[in-house]
Amino acid sequence: MRRLTGVVGVAAGLALLLSSCGDGKSSSGSGDSGTKSEVIGIAADPLDYINPLNDNGTAGIGVSMAIFAPLVTTDPESGKLQNVMADSVTPDKNSQTWTIKLKPGNTFQNGQPLTAKDYVDSWNMTAQGSNGWKNNGFFSKVEGYDAMNPPTPDGATPKPTSVKALSGLKLVDNLTFTVKLKVPFSQFGLTLQYYGLAPIPEEVRKNPDAYKRKPIGNGPYKLAAAWNAGDDLKLAKWDGYKGPAIPQADQITYRFIPNADTAYNEFLAGNLDFVDVPSTKVKSFKTDAPDQWVTSVSSGANYLVIPAWDARFKNPKLRYAISEAIDRNAFADLVGLSEPAKGLIAPDMAGYRDNACKYCDFDATKAKQLLQEAGGFSGVLNINYNTTSATGQIYAEAIGNMLRQNLGLQVKYTGKQGSEITELADSRKLDGLRFSGWGHDYPSIEDYLTPMFKSNGDANFAGYANPALDALLAKGDAEPDPEKAIAVYQQAEDIALEDMPLIPLYTKSNAYLHSAKIEPRVSKYVGVSALWATFK
Image (cartoon, rainbow, N blue to C red; front, side):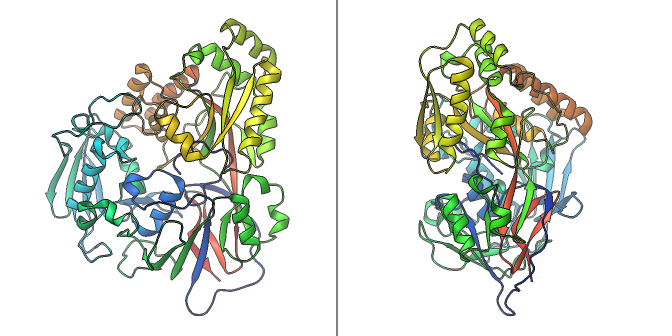
């Protein structure tokens, strides 16, 4: 589950979620004896393209799970790392150079054999800063990244460089390549399950724009019909997939419905087989669709983002004052299926600490004192919210009312589409606060800290930088002992909580509705998935 920038209260149904419980099983209905098909609703704007290397959004990565296959994955039964396209992933003694050997016999859906060169070339394209691909930051730890990504002003795209390949990527043979990192990184093997690292074949690499709506993957499903922007995405099972887990569905249709309430109603009308429960329905879904729901604890957390580029927020006591003025219990109750956040890490992650945040308890008196010590706030505080979320304005006004009542601030609200909020923030032009969310791409505390808080993190929502935190992340990366590494990462979290570029708000459970003919896969390790549903 990648960033949910500009969105609050939106569930990520196709992402990596850790499940806690499921309800009673459906009492009636069965799949057809012939073709097994399902229609999966995605409450998001239609995708403009499919390229996992250039997408870190929930909807795009969710669809990529069907069309592409990762090197490794977390086994849903055991929770252990399992090879998919990789035959082996082996670190050296320092966890700095990793050897990746592919299984023989795999191909892309166009018949091209899958080779080590496909990974090396695909990763080099992503690492080239001038391409502007969204998963570029993943390769920041690989040797040679800096030469392909020269220093660039905030919000600007790096200029083309003469260097076109990461010096740390080396082909060994047709099925083997090595990755040399700038520094040791004990978590690197876990990162290889991220779908944003999937390879693309040579014909796509030659002209990615020509294939943005004609993806050619290496996963269990392929494009079944011409796909234009705004259309349903129709996929058919691809017989060439040789992964460890083959989904049951013969055909899958992804239907994009921008309004989450509309998607929910489409399910109730019998037009969808699976959909996320929107935040507006968290108190009614059990009676709306009895025996056709499951819930899961989301491996994610939700935040209020402080713009580091705005000098009005420079004093940390001001940020503490805003945090202390928020009644998280009341806000979590408003959101539903939620708990007040106690830190920056999801509570189901190894390394989570209850009450890690010392400025996250509601205390209006303390908040006013901190605001006074900070010298007050200049001007009107703007809170940005996503207009495509049914609850975006409600949540913004709830936070704003708390800041108005408990701090005496003047507050205004600005509604924009989530994509516009993201674009303005990425270019450091967004005025005021906004909501964000994050969930891991691989099960490590490090994946909450590096993307959002490292100075060049690819989801550094606030534009935050602290060399001391960067140094601790590097130290944790180099620690081969998992428990010792967690302790170092916790020190980095402490710095981020002290600097507070993001204010923790809540963690939530997600709920999903499913038709009577399917039973979604529910795993405490990898969560709820319609893609790997069982047909009745």
